[in-house]
Image (cartoon, rainbow, N blue to C red; front, side, top):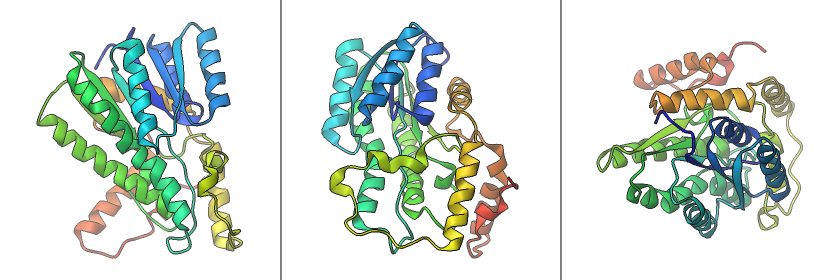
Length: 287
């Protein structure tokens, strides 16, 4: 897809972070925008700011972990605009502890948003995209943590590895049927978002009843380092510009942070050598 003016974009997780950056870029491209998020007040604020700059937007409060919500989102978009040209399955959260200490509620929440949120949206939108005459492009937000590994954030990584697998499979399945629906998977590194504050949107039913144990010194150091790198990371708007460049170039893998590529290459080489997995997070350049 090369031209975006006047076309329709749907963005989940649009109230903050990468989603908001994508919304701003869509507005700059002259698109009509369907903004979806679970965080209603923040969603309304983003919509008001974009409208003040002349963008045509609507908002839909949506919990992507619920199939009925994503079906409602798709129906609203098509009822109002008649087509969708860019679908950004972007909503995401992080949470949990070690693999064995993370609770069923932790797993249900993170996988529900990061994996089932993508699946639910695809189930709602892909039949409609296939039926419409216009071309379209789907971008599923995964993470560089969907391609490399190390200790910590196990549920998040599991969800993002799965999102990459879903995206790759979707690419092949759509290629068997059509050339007018394209797919990309976005695997960002550190972007200046509120991902570490995702608990603000955690449903009451999925809260943990018991308090967590205190983090170890190593876990605290890793969390602080991650927070610093996120705070100093790429701005969501600059990130969105890179995403649009990739869409124009019809790239499937969107890897906007080249500093992670040596770790990714090393992981692939160790796998082919049948070597033990390394903590490839240690190969990041110094802060």
